[in-house]
Length: 311
Image 1: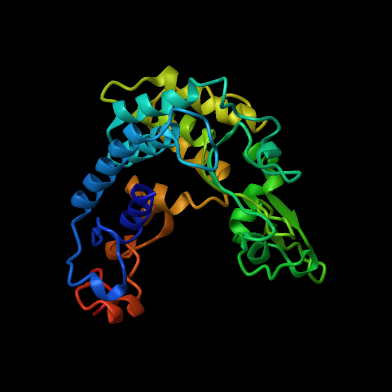
Image 2: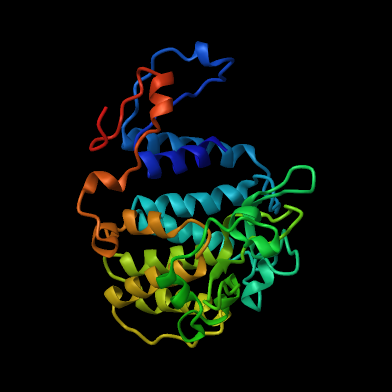
């Protein structure tokens, strides 16, 4: 859990303070400088290696196991461009066909109150006592939400086009307002707040391996294409026949965008591949990291702000 938390911290804000002993209270932390990005990633790997030896080699989709570690390591090695390691760890989950598979149709992993499916590697479990508020934020008022989180009109036009995204059009619902199409995300929809939160799914492992294979010094074109087409075919799309690494990497980038439309992948994928500025029109490279919340800097005087955001 600490490895996962630090992974999300470092890819969002850069190197962070590494607190490796239990915290009894805020006053007991003392002054601690931020670590570098490299030091933070090194600690993440250290935690994952330790966890791998401590956890059982079982299948559990809502609690950490050795398989959860392997999935997170595949993601970790992809970010660090350690292609062979990413291929190896992704392959461990993909090869475990007794416990993991891509479900058909696409919506099977989330529709009809599904949870804990064979596609899920790690998800957060909620019930009517401990609820997930995602649906309230995403759904329109006529479906019990406030709908303040919505896809952009540009992306809704793409995601509603089955010729581009296949069955993933099921991630959208259209609730017209004053006769105008108004699109909302439908990954989280349960009015009782029991939607799982998806941390990592098998489809990501296929796309991790596809990207790593295409990025090797001598690209594995056929292997990368096969992994990419597994994800496309499950979404009801035809296989691609592209034969260059550059074309494959672009197709994989797009497939990640559609496959994980509301699962918080797109920004991080563009930043880690160095494409965020070109794709999103960002002129200031400092903005590739988020600002440290000012309230946290007030609490901890040793916490420094990221460049480009003032003091």
